[in-house]
Length: 246
Image 1 (cartoon, helix red, strand yellow):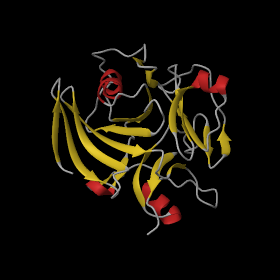
Image 2: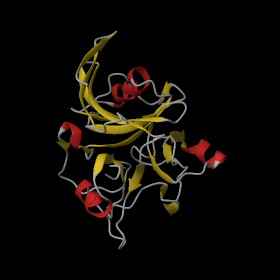
Image 3: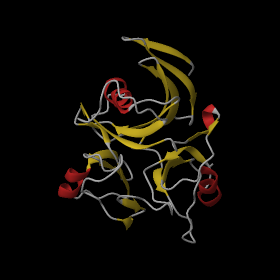
Image 4: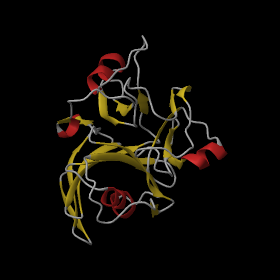
């Protein structure tokens, strides 16, 4: 489906292409506050949405092409959390039920330590962004999980440290999830934006009660249905949807 939808406040949604015949992964252009974003929406209840970090020989994959060499064709992929110089995750990381990095609940330097931060928790049928202290208290079972920060939206409210006219601007990417966990919206700004504008995209346009920042500056997207294949940096944790077997 192609075309445009105009909504109150001059928000435009331009549908760029569908990634699957069943419309279970859809990438589109979104205009918010006169800024352009690319949003890929995944039906987490049906799609093979998962995290990727290392290959079978314990080597870091580092990019989308490496995932496809090891796992098969991707419908969509994006970087999914901050990482150290060796590209190991900064916070909690679980892949296919195996935890390789622990949850971090203390405040610290940088965007990751700008509390509250959060965790994206995946099961076979659900995706949920959960604030880290709540995650620590509730102990949900996740097949895959990645921790990052800061939270962009917490129970419908913007992160309290965001400033409307903040001058720190980067290409940024993140994820927000629906209240029932059936849908995950992955967004990346097409130009540098501040945290406030990025957070309001998830709260006001995508209507996600909880959303999590993945990273800035190194943010990358792979969406072959719209001809998008970002490169230029070696990545740590990544998230993606594998194409169904033919």
